[in-house]
Length: 107
Image (cartoon, rainbow, N blue to C red; front, side, top):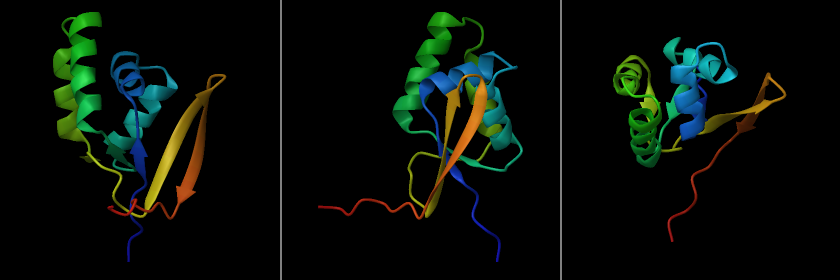
């Protein structure tokens, strides 16, 4: 049985920086998604904000997000049993594994 791919929740800053700046750690995270090594968790509000930021701050780059989304596996929620978070600290990519993620119970 194959192990499930780690699910990585990223915020708008990581998404935009990874799309626009190709040499940073943020881009490395997006490359992992393109290589199908991880599944990105992208809530709808992150995608909406990403589109607004691209249009406002990087005119002409708006199509990058849609092109990227068609090339990667992504989800809008944290459902699943495993997630991985990445933090950028002092120029290094640090990976923290958070095992046995459980979805909060519905009230």
